[in-house]
Length: 226
Image 1 (cartoon, rainbow, N blue to C red):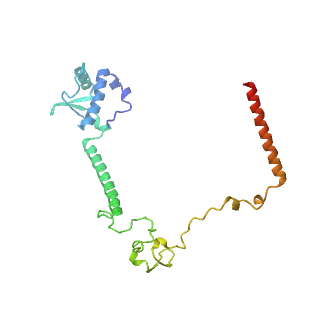
Image 2: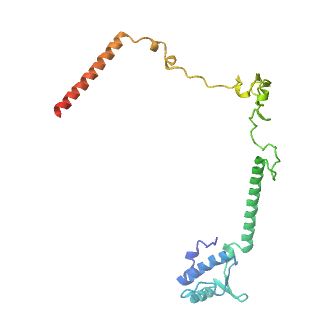
Image 3: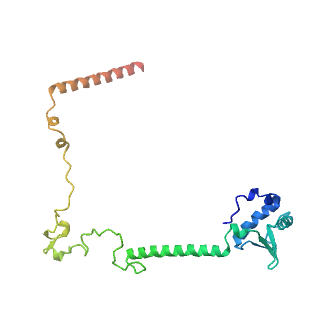
């Protein structure tokens, strides 16, 4: 990335250039960074715009551009004081490439180790650092459930009890099976399960009659309005 001094816009030498020379000077900084030329501008590399020759002469006259004979062109004054050289840019790119390569090697090593494939990481079967212990109760595979071993006794690896037949038919004591949800009556207190008192039944009946009378009255009023 090309760097332009923060005080460039207010420098007396820059302000005395005029707009065309100021624009060409800013263009030359971007060009040198893009081509990694360490501040060198070949002859005729600038864009063919009106007044560009006068701008070049103005930059040379103020000392912002220095004439170079071999190869023919100009050198941007103090360019390397504010921008990186070709050697610095190549060193930075090499450092970034090395960091990316190390990161990919570490990532690929962990991925291959988890997949059990050979690679720069630990070998097949080696536990990963920081990995939790395996919770598989059958590290050597589930018990044999073929028909030929239905009559053979087997030991449950969870509850350590001996059972006959298929493992899927074994009632493991240590496995917590969901309990049946009790009915609503069992959740209610004993007082709520007692018969409703006659007084409450009479009050409910009166409320029901009142609601029916209001509905009938509303229906009659609707018929009269119609």
